[in-house]
Length: 245
Image 1 (cartoon, rainbow, N blue to C red):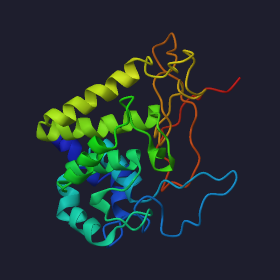
Image 2 (tube, one colour):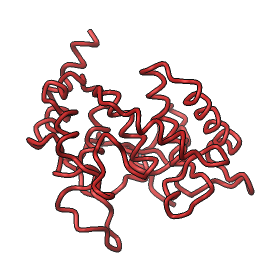
Image 3 (cartoon, rainbow, N blue to C red):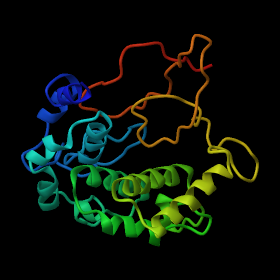
């Protein structure tokens, strides 16, 4: 039964709509992380969420059978045609951002691409406190909650798919300890939340670090913190949203 339901992701609803938007070169919106027509961030403007990486994240999270994209030669086409915005690096080789690399590991494993080089990158760029920070290239020496969580998700996807190695399991353990020592969302120094939005609840969550929200007496949660930015189409179902105080 679940296989029949999963097959519908490619032929009905949001899944079919997103699949139809794929470019002939294997990408979405003509770019790896940003659309080909993206002119840069300006004050008050949020980044778009339509390019290849964000779209692959959605396809994977929605349960699309990877065979659909493999039949389209998506992994090969991305290897041939897609380059990162940073220095034009090859798509499946990853780039310098921990979060980007984590998503690429998960998507690559899903599609059968060779992402072993990116996994090695995580082992080489783990910081002394046990986590990762996307700003390491700009001199950051302390780990970021969000970068660490995404890195752990990428490494976990690798270990689940391949069985992992002593090195990847050890790296995950250090990263998990970094988060656990901080109760997942609190500063080690003061015990305060790392940011006012760590307890918000929304989908898609995009780049924000989210850990929890307050459950209502009826067992439901209110959505809050919907992120702006260009999307192919809205995917969130209508519902009640938390109104900021």
